[in-house]
Length: 46
Image 1 (cartoon, helix red, strand yellow):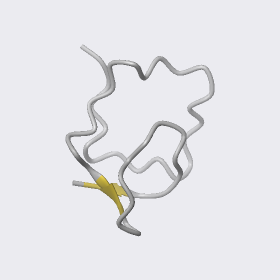
Image 2 (cartoon, rainbow, N blue to C red):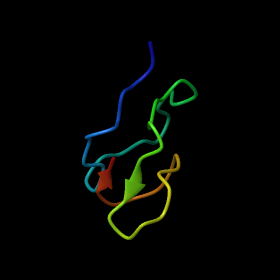
Image 3 (cartoon, one colour):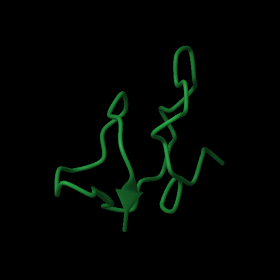
């Protein structure tokens, strides 16, 4: 249940209107070291 974005590249994804309340980021980090947050852009790495 919910999206599993642990290994997803969101750089080109449009998340407008997406249901991410149940998204599972598994404490992932962006390439620049920032935590993955809904609405962030960039490559998300575990």
